[in-house]
Image (cartoon, rainbow, N blue to C red; front, top):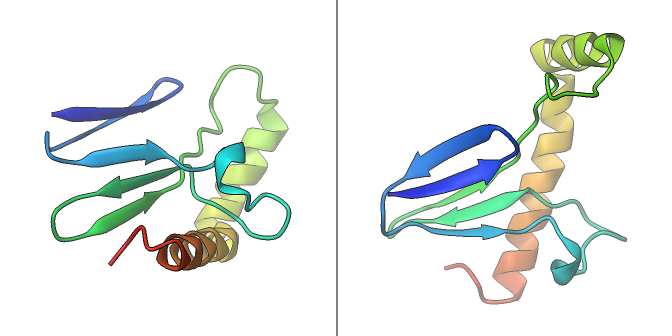
Length: 98
């Protein structure tokens, strides 16, 4: 098994999964495109993963409440849509995905 960790959040994938941190300075998207946190590659599919933890220490209560409200209302979906789209375009252009 392969485990992805972000703060206190852990997600376990099959051993053959290739996991890479994507949302960092190495991809060069930060000035023009959005990026997901991780890309998980399996034999027959890719997962683009964005991790949000509104309950992590240091996040003010009102900010947590606002995030949860936005999430439940669907407003967060718009941001996630662009993160996935831009990540896919970048990976496809770099011949990193089929």
